[in-house]
Length: 204
DNA sequence: ACATTAACGATGA
DNA sequence: TCATCGTTAATGT
Image 1 (cartoon, rainbow, N blue to C red):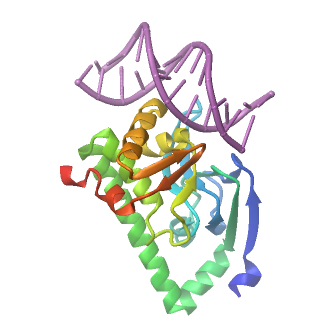
Image 2 (image 1 turned 30 degrees about the horizontal axis):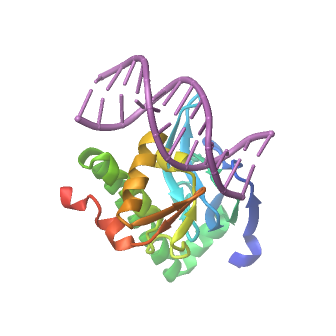
Image 3 (image 1 turned 60 degrees about the vertical axis):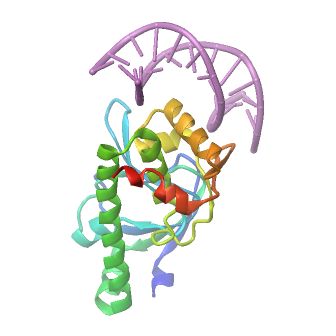
């Protein structure tokens, strides 16, 4: 039933996936590429709320509440996304206990993610904040399909971590010197996920 | 101090 | 040819 009612879409880099204030008609999953949730103001400034790598799902909150979407959704990289209609989502929620469990875990993880973000922004120095922002993207619990490399520009890491691109560049080079990351053009490879997670945590 | 913006050239796809 | 990256200088808090 899910497969018959859902559809997939190829998205170009920079394409809008969904817009703020529109009805939340779909629960959306990322199969490949990278998508971000962000809010843009009239003057073009933006606040990136979260990056969603392969294996990630989002929008369940607004679908459950049947409310307008709270953020804009854009493809950072060329991506393949799955769109599950709201009605299908609700039907699954009522008929499948395993699905309900999945959604609860999803909401719980998302809550933990945002709590950690606030904590990180107030307690950690910039290098550690960058490390934690990246570690979130590579979280195997939330995003089981994400490998150890991700195509993302340093500019986007900056928007995600709330730090300027120039400062991100320094932080990433520091992490590369520690052999935690390997950097290449528009791509970040995690060499040591454990140390990436641990980086900065001793400060707390 | 330390981050940000602005600007520049170099380099990759 | 355009996006991305590495760096520096000026500016702000």
